[in-house]
View (cartoon, helix red, strand yellow):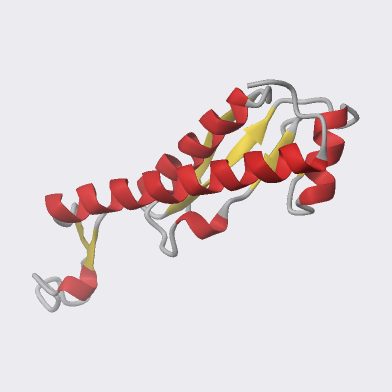
Length: 137
């Protein structure tokens, strides 16, 4: 894909990245649900109280993920992206972070990371230096 030159290019890229992220997150969630829960939450005061209770089981660790852009904020493509989506903000570690919170309405970090990886891949095709980043809550 070519360099981002207009707001229409950003809109198209953003739409493709979001769709890829939603699809990847849904695929990862389905795979994890077929595999079953990985963790059993235990109440230390009464360890056997919730054993086997699905409300106390977790598919994975809690966390979030986002797309990190290692780009100069004054470049044309970054100015266009920041204009299109004001949630794109300076990263603490340099570059820019773009949160795609609508990939998955949950807290499983593996699902969020799958969505962010797919979105970053699309953004790389449009000339951005993008990759997925995450943290555990």
